[in-house]
Structures are given as structure tokens and as C-alpha cells.
Length: 246
Length: 220
Image (tube, rainbow over all chains, first blue to last red; front, side, top):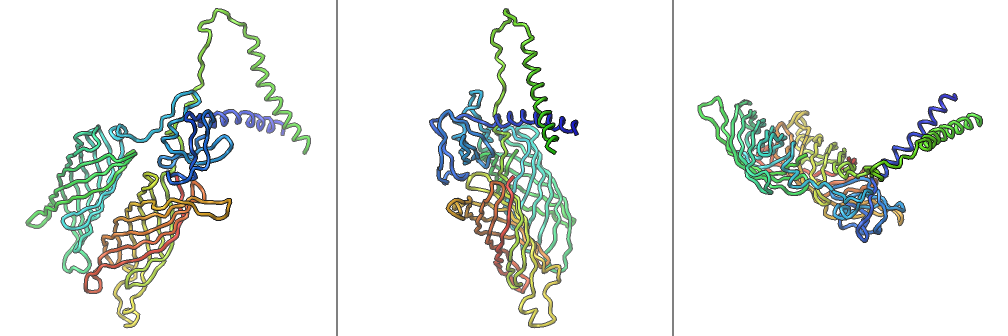
């Protein structure tokens, strides 16, 4: 029993230190004449409290560009990123809020996105994941669901994308790829069978950095589907959508 | 019992005294060095706040249940899952997966024997990718002391529905309300229309399939 008590006492004694340090690390000092606490994480929510210059606030969590903070007297509310940037760290240095800027966009590694458009007259919904090898060059894996009037197809493809001006907000790109397409005629069409063919494509597109992690992209691709029949199919595709990077 | 508590407290006091006491004792033992340079050692404790390390809660993951009407095929219980990402205070993207079961058409019921679809084909499942807009962010008052944040949102997007043996391109749009009792937890109520073309009954027509559901989500 005494040994257990000693261990317990030690744990109690030691644990008090690091925890207190962690809390202090999340504290900021208000530098503006005051900062406003909103009741919710949006500009439309009313301001219910203000914290004056020189007072300390504790940052609890973040949602989009809003931070939930605790005032010295315990009130909890939401402060915008712009106001949080007007606070100082305990060291006296200004706070930097990472906003995922255009520079972050150029340095991105991974990206996922969803696009919608038209594939040879049918609707197409696509999902993709991308990895950037350099600022200009990235590899992409696409899955597309082509939903037509007479048949449905699933397309899986690998792309190489060359972005011409990665540092620009709006930049054109060139893409080249290959894949497989699986086509099933609809139930009401008779005497046809499912088929799987290889396909290759070439395309151009444009991407626009929007805000935070978000990018809008639109592209046009022309495909060659190597069918087992006499003629190859050459559908064209255009689509647009959003992607986000991290 | 009391003696045990006493031992515990005494031991803790002893440990505290010994640890801090020793430190003080050692500090006192060190001889003061006069010609040490620099005079003031700027030992700044780095207490920088890493905003990037603050817990961001932009994702919302949850389940929902409700009723979905399949045009000509009655009403079924719908179950689904959704994940959303909040881009700004107003916009979010959401993807959802849902599943319901169609009933018999009036024709099938009246004719007795004729079946338009097999049991398997009567299952409807859908996925969609949608963009949402928090139209009316606000608060819901439960009492003068208690208010929860909420938002009425518009949502719409594209996707695919598998029904009657085929995948069909589907548009969806609707209206919902999100009530946030805790910062990490929300309750949703949604009304959604799923629109697709179907030629099952001879002629191609556009069908509207209305869904109403309630659900809960967790922010992370």
C-alpha cells in the first residue's frame, strides 16, 4: 500500500507540470483595442462579448475560418481568423494563421476531386486522386461513372498532367492518359453483351485556385476506345468540378 | 481508511518537499560566478502557438434514416450515410450513400400475378455529390438560457441511382436544417428530391423521388 501511494503521489505531482504548459501554449494576448466574440462560426452571428487589449484568450478549436476561444472570465465564443491575426503570442510575436494560400497550392502534394460533365452524349460523374511529382507534373487516377440512355460505362484511367503556370491563380494544363472502359447496355436494350475495352485519351483543361484548399477545374478530353469491332469509338468528353488539396 | 489517506497525503507532501527542496538546496550550493559572460542569458521559453495544430473541425460524418417515395413503387424506409466538408462559413460539399426498398405498383397488386421487377431489382440505392449553402445560419432557442446554433441550408448535386436493374444518372436537390447542440455533434432534418429518367413502363419519363430523413453527424 505505501508503495502504491508513493507512485500515485509521484504521478499526481508530475502530471500537473506538462498539462499546465500545454494550456499556456494555446494562449494569446489581444493586441487590437478589442476582439469580438460571436455566438457562432459565421459573420451573421451576433457579437455577445468583447475581450480588451492586453487580456489573454485561449484558443480551443477551429471551423473553416473561425476559432472558438475562451475569454479570461470563461465566456466561449467564435472569433474570425482576421481578428485572431490581431493577437500576439505570449512571446510577443504576431500570430500567423495558415490560410492555405496560393503558395500552399503550388506546394501541394495530394489532391482529390469530383467533376461532372458529358461523355459522348451521356452524363459522367468522375472522382480522382492526384499526386504531384513537381510543381508542374502530377499523376492522376480517375474513376468515372458514365450514365447514358442506352448504356452505362465505368472508366478507370491513369493520367499524366502538365500544369503550365503553377504559380498563377488560373493556369491551363495538358493531359495524357490510358485506361479501361467497361460498358453494359441497359436492361431494356436486347441482344447486346457487356464488353471491356482499352482506351487512351488526350486533353486540355484549366484550373483556378479559389480559396483555402479549393480549386475549380474544367477540362476537355478526346478518347479513343479500342473496340473489338471494325471501328474504334472516339467519344469526346468535357467536364467541370471542384478539387481540394492537402 | 483515514490512516491510508493520511499516508497518501503525507507521502505526496514529502515528495513535493523533497523535489522542490532539493532543487533549492542545489541552487544555493552553486558558487556565484562574477565574470560569467553574457550577464543575461536570454533563455526564452518557446511558447509559440501553432495555429496549424489547433483542432480543426471541418468534416462532418453521420448516418440518417427516413422515408423515400419511389415513383410508382410506393414508399420505403431509407437508410444512409453522409460525409461533408465545410469549405467556408457558407459553403460545404457533401457526399451521401443511401438505400431503400420499393413496394409493388398498384398494377402488380391488382393483376395478382404479374411482377414487373424481381426482389433484387426493387432495391434502390443511390450515391450523390452535392454542394450545400447555409442559407440561414441562426439559433434555435429551447429556453431563455439555452440556445443551439443552427442553419437552414440548400443543397443540390449529381449522382447515380441503381433501381430496376440499371444505374441511372440522378440529380438531387433539397432543403435541410442542421441543429448543433454541441460543437462536435449535429442533428439534421432533410427533404430531398431525386430526379432521374426511367423507361420501365414502356415510355421514358422523368420521375421525382422524394425523401425525408433525420440524422445525426459528428464534426471532426
